[in-house]
Image (cartoon, rainbow, N blue to C red; front, side, top):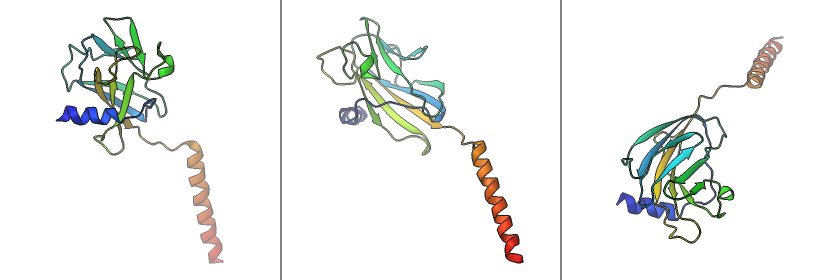
Length: 168
């Protein structure tokens, strides 16, 4: 039942979407794979979730990603010379190889996406279930910038000045 719902969500998911950091930690959770080819996920220098050796539900800490910093996921097909990028412009065949669907985050301040990959180039079955995982990105602590502190200070001085002016 979960697989059917997931595939239905991916079939209506957006193409060309990107995933960005929110200033806090990110985590990936492996959902499953239906591909016959061996593949794994790459995020920068981090390589993880080999599809035939990873149990569904396996979690991986992806570290902290700054607000607005893209998470450049790739699918590496180990048994073929193919690497597919989250950005289709970087793919050798120029096609979309991932569908990204929003999911319910564990915390309302976080963001959650399910990524479903297609591992075959060109004309394929386009089922986007060859390698599937969820990514949860948490919001970092909000720290006011110096300009915000200055505005708060000016506002307080203005309030005190106004109060003192009303006494006269």
